[in-house]
Image 1 (spheres, one colour):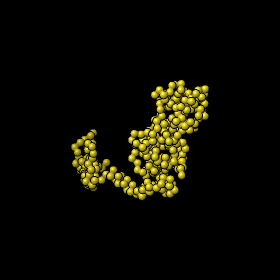
Image 2: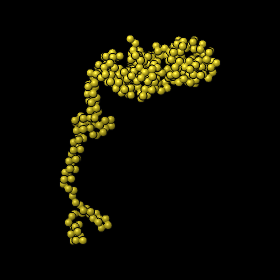
Image 3: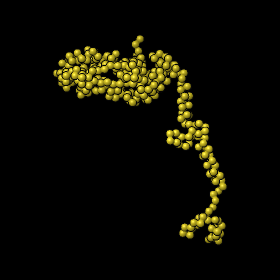
Image 4: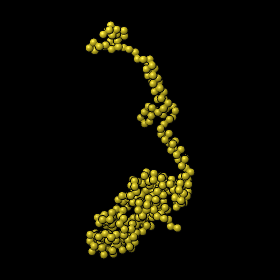
Length: 295
């Protein structure tokens, strides 16, 4: 080892600390590093003054420039709405049945309607619109209140059996068992009869004949003498195999005994614009179960 290496510790100031005979040099940091370090401090102070930085109890410092990500998002949304204003105005004013006659307008309505549906309707009807127990399937051609563009528009606009819109569609099935309108035997009879209407084999076929009479006196006013239902009242067709709550004996017994009372909020529970309502109407109508409007 050279003398320069041996005496290297004598050429620099040390920190005064020694570990097992090893001393630490007190060499200053490079000036370029210090300049960058101090510049970063100055930049950080300036940034915290100019932009939102310091959190408070309820909010943060706004910064002298007034910049915010929320403000940028709001501005972008406003610009997007402004860009779509012309086609939304067209969508809100054109005849419902003429929306799909314009390819550009029809494409926009279906795409916008899909977005509205996923936001406000999918929670009940499912992301694929296939429905669930108590929530109608929108993919078939079975409609409680009608499946034309006009019918769907009214349903979406005002809802069903809600207390928020005086023009909501309304009907109410009596709770025949809970309210004592029918005896348990009569309920069993009419349930067996209703099952036979849809081609099912009831558990007690011999009760179906008596159930026909119970049905005629208590159910035909809404569901029709042949059980095919009445859309004006939202009364389901009982002769097909499509059931909103279920078509087995126990479920039908529960339905007759306690009744059903499904509720749909107006405009899907949101303050939708007329263009948004028409968009989701176009989308739902085109899912596969939409009906042609009456001429």
